[in-house]
Length: 625
Ligand code: MN
Image (cartoon, rainbow, N blue to C red; front, side, top):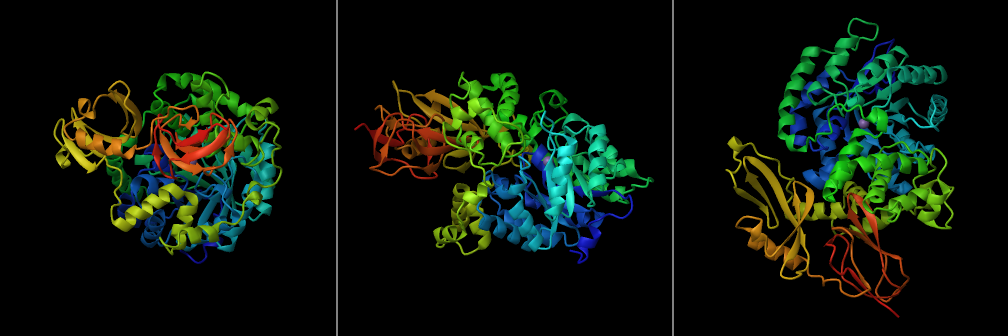
């Protein structure tokens, strides 16, 4: 890294500088964050030669996706990229107090995470909070300052009756006072129009002295026009992606912006033929991940009406598909603005987009609004994410949290330091600080990862193989793990995973099967009816796994949907009242509360954290008193 990187952070004159998102947001937006390190490294040398202001390479969803799907250690990826790209600033996206996860972490975890990220190679921290609650940025900004990295404090751009450009400028002024070296306008949904960009950047420039960096998405087709107007108004840096993984829900193409600005006072000075070579590499890479491209990654101007970000729409589509309710998409898209209004108009970005999206989905699927309320929604109404931008609907707040008073302090003020405790918990498994941080962020996924790493069985989720490259012939079966295999039907390969089995009713048993990561339920006498020859073996394995008794009695606690146990809130012998939360299950990527149906005593707990559970099983027995 150049030692004078601070001095270089302010571009000279009018020259526009570029951050390329090819290694982070671009594949997060187009390929479900699935690009593997092995496909990044061959381009590293070329990328390092370009002369970018920075390369966005880490953070956002990449950390989670590395562990969960690619079975890669995200810290190792960072180290490798740092080594392969020594001369260009490496940038990460940090969700303020949420780091790269979905909830608030204690201050000591935040500080340590930022310190280790810088140590392993990050030069620029782009730090945001979904609610633009600046208190949630304080600790991360201070920690990043201490590392001497560039602090890019961020405003999440959105439109609503409570958001104004003047309001954004006030936030930006405060962020500069907090130590921001640059200010990013993060338009995660591609809502920023050219003239709004011109107005907002102009107002920012009139009030603050630091470089303005614009981040947008091509979702609505407006982003490159907005970039031009933002640059005209004085923005210094824009986010683009190499053309072969650009446009649509990704960033505008780097090469097009470079060409558009050529021979103007804003000329980026970048070499189009070098960029072209890089594009060739990623054009080939893109083919490998074809299976992760959804129909929702192209330009879709619906967002100009619905205001719902593209990434959120594809997530919703997956959630609804998992629940077998894709036909309810229209209803959910209508419900989202209602829920958003009731929540005081949060910008729709992780994690608020998931909170709003999942609650809206449940409001539709349950046939009654707020009949089921997620624990995230309850936390939101308790102000546990921070203070909402606008006024909350008090009637809904009452439904969610009753007479409980929402908090008024910074949410993380309520969290005890946890690093020491986590270090002790993990002491037999690792000594590395990075591992402990990984565990702090994603405990269940991390433990599974560490175990597989120890056993040497880390295996990334499979990719569809082109037939000539060794794919199986028609109807062929390729084995991966006892309960997982690839099957090729009519030349198309699918990943099948038996997630679990329920209990037999009238000779038939429900099996929960993941087909290409979407959950399907089949009720059959035997799996051999629907799956090929090896089904018998898989069937025995999954029945054996689901050894919990079928729920029969009133007090048998069950989960409404298949998922993984995240936390157990009670102990055996404890008294509980009807409706108390007894455990939480991760399904649809959210933590869902499971309640006891009756009052009584917890007689037996039949699950442990990390267990995969199915709807008809008894998870906890509660006995009436
Ligand atoms: Mn983005």
